[in-house]
Image (cartoon, rainbow, N blue to C red; front, side, top):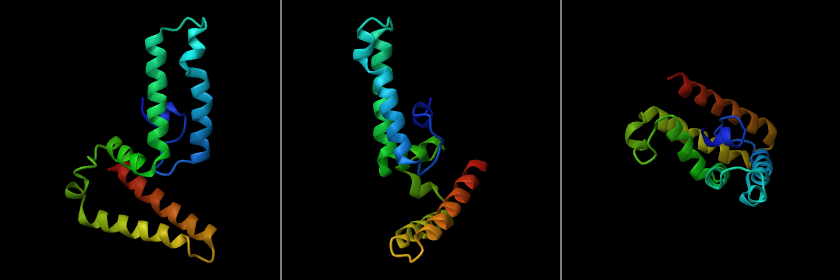
Length: 131
């Protein structure tokens, strides 16, 4: 089970952080070890493992750098070797996308710019999923 599944959110490079947080708190109350030590009958080891996995999932998905690394690894791209394994045109496309996202801050129409960036990013993700 991957971190997105654990938190019950779609696999996206930029998931809704509010939904990540809400799902984490909901699940952390459900799987907190103290809840099960009070007679719920679950094995302590299983509860501790689920709780630890939930914490790792939340920590990873709320942090941009960790989430991007995890996302790449889900598609079998080693983060450490990513630059040497990725085609040059892909790296250039990523630089363009990064620039587009940074430009949103200074855009007159942020909503439109944000929508365009998301569409372009979703397109790249779709291409990656197909390959």
